[in-house]
Image (cartoon, rainbow, N blue to C red; front, top):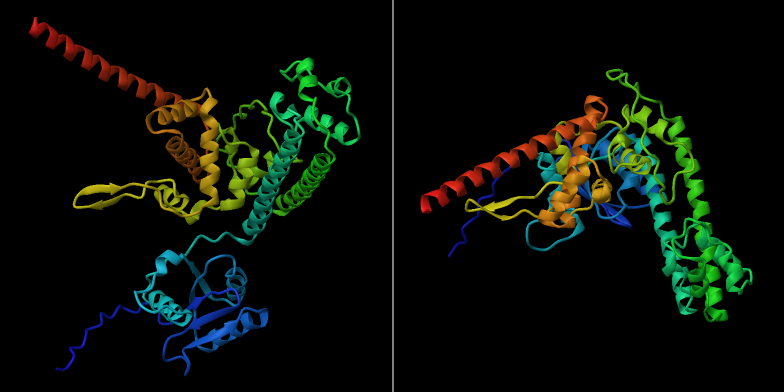
Length: 447
């Protein structure tokens, strides 16, 4: 019996000059349309000479637009090189390029990417400009250094705990002035608890006697050695952080400042300076305001470091997100609603990484002690849905405010949120009065 032939659904080809690339760590597979070369899929090495061979072969084949799929960082050099050659380059999410079931190879992946891109079924990932990419490299590196420093601080605490030195239990921060002075004196050979307690500062809540008791321990040589190693590493990393700050300042200085909007000539409210760990070693506020056009540090929860990280992740051009919904979707700060049969079966956030989302979420979680309307909003959401959901919801609101300020070039006014809060409270009061009147009516009828 003859087999029936399955009919293939042909998709409309909208990009006839499209190519697809499957990126690997050591080799790249490139696919072009069938009529461009006798061998439509080729393998190239990941060396720089191989990247130039890819670009020259694509030029020879008349390709104008390219889609590439990659995991990790292997795509970056080829992406930038192809842009320099004048190609339109799409970096697509691996989730959007899932192949049909069956045998999977790099060759078939490249062909599938080329097919989807020729039919305009792939969306491009966000790519910053060269200035933002450079600034983002420095800001992310600085955050990594801060995380490394915190790990070395934990190693110091562990070494002290093994010697039964409880200093980190009686003072809030071992990395503060008092803590570091005492650790330095211990490493220089001081063992007298009274002499060590002389470094006590009036800002420390614990008494001098408590400090002395916490410094009575066993001075094991091996643990003193590990303490010194962690102490030296901690200060070495902080030296690297200072060098990173110098590079960040240099990049900000070289950037041409945008024109500040003159819509609001009123002087901005001076915010109370708060003590932050790992502060920037230069005055970054003016740089940030001239490049964004507005001062987003006026928003509760956003300090100059968060402002710098936001600028490094997204840049100053928000026109890449034409609408607020697209901006929230890219940040992954909105529910991913899944419906079936007219019912909502899931509303969890999509499982994808976004560094800018983490910044807004962290800023939102810092508002739990704020006395302003944003702090009230966080506490209400936390009482309803828990801390994690409250941080996401408040981060969404912060992102909304930042988007409005940057796109419309208007300064932040807390009075708008105060009026919104007042209206919300009045609405709740009206609803409660209606419920009380309804209950009174029922009681009167029952009597």
